[in-house]
Every structure is written in structure tokens, then in C-alpha cells.
Length: 497
Ligand code: BG6
Image (cartoon, rainbow, N blue to C red; front, side):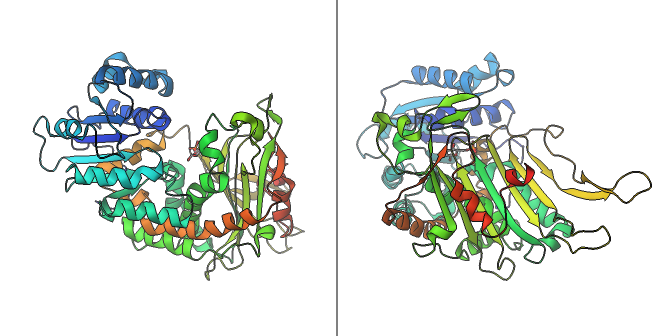
């Protein structure tokens, strides 16, 4: 099964083996996601969730950790003791360093073999560890005889830190798992509103016809967060906003906004088109970096009415650092459809609000019947919070005059719609069980994204000036505004203001 399908039917019984099972991601996202799908009746009772990590825990103590995590990360109205107990009955733990070939592999193997599972029972190996361990874990899973014909391996981001390291990870895992069993997760593709872009574009002929350079002046894709480091300094300082958000999440959103109509919703048809977009991005490198990319780092400021420290002060030991906590850039896609249309991407920590949004700015009209030129319409796809799609159009004022007013022509999505998945991991984790890769990132996609991002990183390395600063709680440095001003454009909050 290849096409996009977040069907809510129960899946067949499976075994989910999580490497990195005591980590933050497992506790905050993976266990809560599996719990919710279990509570909704999608996960059969004889499935197993096996946590592995180095800590010397047993089933009982790991279950207690899992219970606590559910208490913290699942909404109270979705938790009931009996369901939690039944869910924890699925949970096991094997103390194991997945990157080493010695250790408790036999215990894991016999646990998975116990209960005489059907020969075609699906095994999912979920790697939520440091990415430089992925190749070793894949090798051990394979060489210890744990990989079956119906096994898949799920890789969390980041896949590498540049093109070379990404290739190494892909090659390391690819030696032991065929590409069609490798599921690279990008949780933005699990967001309902991101998938909805595909429906909006290709299920509405009116929009589809207007989706090109003739009608669209520019596109903005913003993923803003109010949080700062959240105690992840070790990881984040070695990464920065370009690697952490742009290389994966924002470029994925860009591909669904910009791709050509795929031949079908089949996984490869869809991903072929997404790769084409990535490969058509005009290169940004040291020669044109300054004119097209703004990087920033926050200094002290205020978010949510509270004073917050500077990025450097949040780092352990207040280490001096040039890591960017904000990036805004102008991407251009070298295809007939998009020639000359800027795609402005931006993402940052310590912004004024948590907001992910795509803005499609249509071109202005000619002066005419109603006096001066009408400003172009703006289609706003709000991914989070409160998913919505709005398209204000001008209509006539009621009464005997031709005064105009703007009304929102699209009904809002969101609260009135049934919330199926509270979190994007829910649908994706079960897609891996179903073997449905459409919403996962193919090898060539990751590498094409790195191919475009790596020269930016190299350019920065040579630019000793480092990032511009911005006050925490603002929309980033002045250079981000300047980036658009050159073209006579503005970020959406400046237009609205
Ligand atoms: C993660 C990044 O991939 O996405 C985090 O590593 C970021 O730094 C997070 O906070 C944002 O995800 P979401 O779903 O809250 O927008």
C-alpha cells in the first residue's frame, strides 16, 4: 500500500522496537502517540512495544516511566487508568546498547520470537538515538537476525549534519535495509494542514489554475516558536535553525506548495515531484548569501510577558556561540512555473508567537472600476495553532454604493472539524506499520535538501561576522525585513500591522 492513507481501521498486530527508549522524544511523542492509537482501537492487544536503551531497567520500572510520561504528555481527558494499564501491558524493555554488537541481543530476539508470532508479523525498528549510531544499529539488527521480510526501520531527523554525513547515514542503513523499508520521518508531513495543501491545490481546479508565476507574486513559509533552548543546548548549539528546521520541515512544506501535479498519490509519484522541486532550487552560496539569507541569534528580551535570557546565557557555561537561532531566506525555484517568484522561508526560536503558516500572495490587479489598483488576495494556510485556511476577497458594502470590504471567502477549518490525530506522530507511526511511505522522506529527497543547504553552511563558516542579533520576543533581526524590502515585499505581520 503506497498511497497516502491515514485510515483509522485497526492495523494488524505488530512489534515496535524503539532504540533510545528512555529519551525525550520517546517519552514526549512516541509513547503518547502509540497510546492514543491504542485507546482509539487501532492497535491490537497482542502487539508489543519494546523499549531499548542502555539504562539497566526491567519491564516494571520502564512501564512506570512510560506511565509517568503519558500522565505528562497526554491530555487528562484522554487518559483512563484501565486503558493505560492495558496499554502498558504491551510495553517491554530490554537493556541494550544498539550500536554495540555485544549485549542483550539474544534477549531481544527471544522476546520478539515469543508467542510464536505469524511469519509476516510486522516489525518496526524506530531509531530515536543520535543519528551517528543509525548505521551501527541497522547493522546489528540485521546481523543478529532480527530483520524479517516485513521489517521497517524508522529514522528520526536529523539525517546527518551536511551532505557528506547524510550520505554516510543513508549508506550505512542502506547496507542492511532496502530503501522501501526505510522510513525517514519528518513530523511536519504528519501535520493535517500540511497534507491539506496537497488537497487544496489539486482538488480545487480554480486554485490549481492560479498556482503559478502568472498569479502568485511571492510565498512565505514561517515556522516560529516562542521557546528557547528547552534544555537541548548540547544538540541545538551544534545544529542551529538551518539544520534543525529549514533543511527538513520547511523545505518539506515548500515541496508540497511548489511541486507539479503528481501522476497519482502513490508514494513514489509524490516523492518524485518533491525531489524535482528540491533539485530546481537555485543554489545559494558564499557569492550570494548576504543578499538572500538572514541569520540571527536572540539576545535578552521578553516572551509571554516574561523576561528571558540571551541564547548565549542559556547555553551551559554561557559559552560564546555563533549558532543561529533564526534564519530567513529567499529561495527561488528554477522552473517555468515559478521563475521569478520568491519563496521566503523563515524559522526562529523566541519569536513573539508559536505559529506555522504558509502565505500565498497573489498579484495585485490593475487600476479600474473601483479606483486604485486592488491589492492582491492573500491565501493563508495556518498549520498551527488552530489549523485554518483563509482567503479574504473584496465584496461590495451592503447598501446603494460600490464601497468595498474584505470578507473571508473560505470557511475556517479547525475546531468544528473532528480532530483525529492530536499529534503528527500518531498517523506516521502507524503508516510505518502499514508500510505506507508516502509521507516519509526518500533518500534522494534528504540528499537533495542537504545539497542545497550545505553551501549555505559553508558560506557561513567563512563569514566571521556571525549572526545578527534580535531581541527575544521579536520577529528576528532587521536583516530579515530588509531581505523582503529589497523586492518591495513585507512579512505578513508587517502587512497586517
Ligand atoms: C523539531 C525541532 O524537529 O521540531 C525542534 O528539533 C522544534 O527544535 C520542533 O521545536 C517544532 O515542532 P512543532 O511540531 O512543535 O512545530
